[in-house]
Image (cartoon, rainbow over all chains, first blue to last red; front, side, top):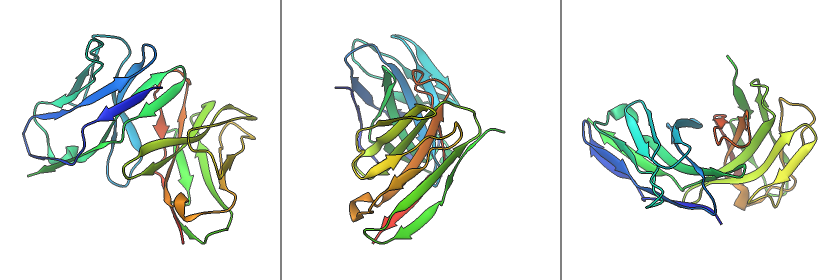
Amino acid sequence: GNSVTQMEGPVTLSEEAFLTINCTYTATGYPSLFWYVQYPGEGLQLLLKATKADDKGSNKGFEATYRKETTSFHLEKGSVQVSDSAVYFCALSLYSTLTFGKGTMLLVSP
Amino acid sequence: DAEITQSPRHKITETGRQVTLACHQTWNHNNMFWYRQDLGHGLRLIHYSYGVQDTNKGEVSDGYSVSRSNTEDLPLTLESAASSQTSVYFCASSESPNTGELFFGEGSRLTVL
């Protein structure tokens, strides 16, 4: 079956540090890949997506590249802010089914 | 602006009681979903619907039911609440079932004592 594996958190960083959150997937076909973000007390919001190999999704300074050869979709940001503190979910979509990873909490301190 | 709303946002109930969580969207989306979020499990799909009168079981559907009588609403019913159903429940909708782009409500926190 399909699955998504994310690095366990929490990830604790100081403001302006570089962020990487690892995500790898297993799928029986060629999925679309997503990062969702959940701020405290809120629902999930789509952060970025990529629909085919080598695509780069980007939004709000975050980036992720669809790497078919390593089945990965790592989330990166060059300089995090306190307001980026949230839980980040990697997800894949295949044949109308969306499968989420378990989420990675990011804590950014001033 | 279009939105998706859930109610109640917080509920405490007792084991064995029937509970219904409401979900209402004004996006006019055909596709609606219910997830539960638990620590260590992430989000798990409970039920989903691709249109009026259509309902489907997800990964963790036991003990839950949904009905879809119109486009806007997909209520989730716990027929006989159990402590294992203590969780945060999220409703979501999408324009297409194939895009993976979901719009989420703010969640309903349910505690079963």
